Picture 1 (spheres, rainbow, N blue to C red):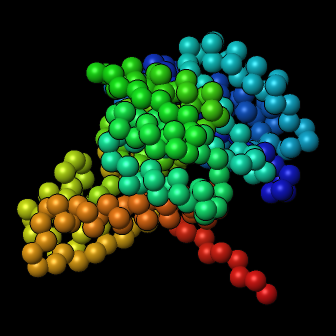
Picture 2 (picture 1 turned 45 degrees about the vertical axis):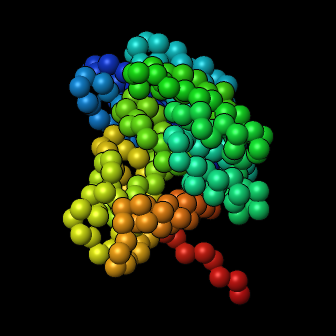
Length: 291
């Protein structure tokens, strides 16, 4: 299939684990003359998740019929199915998730304002109301969503993501752990920034851990989010040396500046389609040089 003539469709299937789901979905793709490019499935605590990418000929593909028939199959399987079309000519929609800290959010919004980000920042999701004024300044829809149970928050967030047709989710210091039920719906489309050079110091209070362990080099990591906390494929990392007399607070201040820059770099690489992901390892494609 000619690369320019193909339409890439991403299908995610989530629900209670049962037999025959993989076979039924893959057979549906084949019957619609699709070619499966990649497929991945997992089961955690009885919850089944499958991520499938298939290619179709642009000219022969009937989108409305495909959507209708796949929804019918989803009802038959008692599964939730999400379809995402990779449309290279459409400006991508980004959702930014934040908590209280605003340094990554403002860096991304400023980059959009100056044209450094070629995408539409469609919505801001926040677990705290602190950044509402920033969203108002940039005239971006803002949703303060906080529930005692993260699953309840995610149900509300998933509906917002569908309404805004979100292509990429950016966690700009979103201090909530996303469940597999959420993550599986956006395979390789959620980017997080973590304040350490992973795999060192995963989880919370990374700067404190680094200070207490006497680390001489501290940094941050932009990575794709998977169901395993802070274990997703690494996109890029940056670091700085600890100076004599540095405190936890001074390390954190220096780290936050680097977090914002590194996260922006990862988002830019993703939007420029320069990221190749194979077997959990990220490779950055070089830009084409002009002759």
